[in-house]
Each structure stands twice: as C-alpha cells, then as structure tokens.
Image: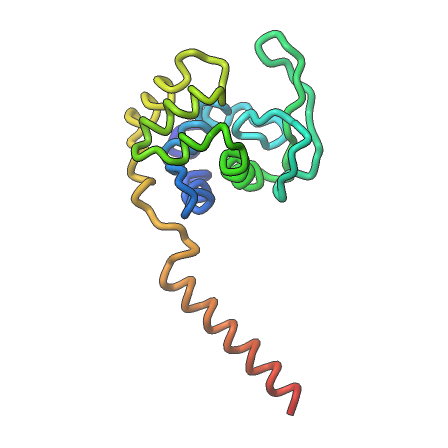
Length: 174
C-alpha cells in the first residue's frame, strides 16, 4: 500500500482510538506502519503484531493465527476488522502495566523509547525506527487532530437524534 493510501485509510481511526488515552496517534500510526509494512502484511487484520495471550479485550474474540516470526512459530491475535486491531492496540497498551512509562511520556519520541524499553518489540532499533517514520512522514500532525467523536457537527447530530428518540418515547407514553 502506498503511504498516502495507508494514512488516508488508518490515520483518523488511530486518532479516534488514542483520544484521551495518553497515547500519541503519531506513535500508533508509526507502529502500524512498521509492524504491517505499510499495510502490506496484515494477517488476521492485526496491524500491530500483537501476540495472542489469554488477556481479555473487548476488541479481540480469542481467535488467533499461527505465523512464523523471525524463525519462531507464534500465535498472533486475529481480528474481525483492522479497526478492532487499532482499538485493541490502545486497550492493550493501557491495560499492561509495563507500558505505564510510555503512557506518561510527554513527547512521541519519549513514548517510542519507552515502548521499546518495555519490550513491545524485539528489535534493538525499534524506537529509532518509529521516530524516523514519525519524522519522515510528518506524523506529528495527527497528534494535533481531534477525534471525529469530538467534532461539533457530529455532536449536534447525536444531540438531535437523542431529542428525536426522547420525543418518540414521550409520544408513545401519551
């Protein structure tokens, strides 16, 4: 997949998933790029290479695929959609205490280093790779974007739907 196509397809989903979590969207996008090879390797819709452990997640239904990972056969989480993979990645980082320092990071670079230090990936150059991808592709721009869920127009539409539903309930009870 071309970089522009990848970003058009996944960047906003990453921004939405990271909203209010302490996770920089630029780091999440960079991880998806590195782990999936720009979306060219997404077996089981797993953009992040998350290994299948018996840890609960509302976004993962316990299914897995078996794949070769650097000469080792491992089980990786299988998702119904890549959107579930993105949401689960955020959930995974938040629920694993070993990533606490990463979530407290004040810059994307610091977060990348803390994720690597916590053992997210086996590569010794993982943090440097993420930082290079972030800088090369101007991914910090996504750290400033707002979630679509906070969009004024989306909120107005949701409020209007709520009013219509409330009016319908009142009308039925007359």
